[in-house]
Image 1 (cartoon, rainbow, N blue to C red):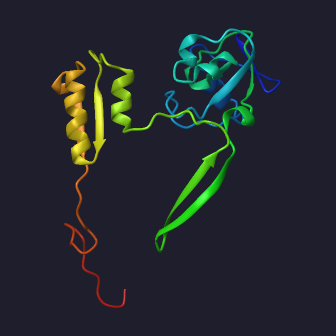
Image 2 (cartoon, rainbow, N blue to C red; image 1 turned 30 degrees about the horizontal axis):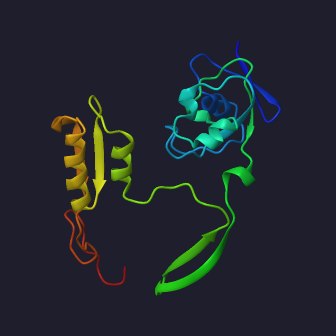
Image 3 (cartoon, rainbow, N blue to C red; image 1 turned 120 degrees about the vertical axis):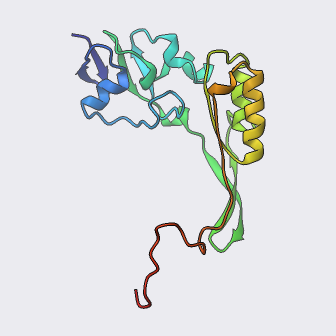
Length: 191
């Protein structure tokens, strides 16, 4: 049976499990979110053992070079010893520069990071298509503001996704607070 070590504790792995599946099954304390390699919440660091490329696909090269990988994308492998990520490496210090009150219950907070941030400005749909210009054989699931959905559908089609594989759901904007809804009972006064 394959065994991995996480924060100095050994865990047995079942066939076909990812590192995250193994740790989750054993109720180990590991953060996770999407289980698909998108949120980067399950980022861990290898002490010993080989980490497959697929487990480092969506992370910064600098972190991959230090042995960081996504537990949800890494098949459990014998000899793999891992540890939680170093907060000083993964997170950046920032100071609040300004707080603007936008409405009674909404404020905008402006921060200044102590180090350069790793991000790319722009809409998520544009960034996704820049990273993946050929999407032949893919499916697209798009939701958001109607104008963004229209543009993303065009971009998906131009990137090679056939129309039947583009699933789009633009948000409808309407005030439902005062509209009577089908099947809703009118409550007598005093309820």
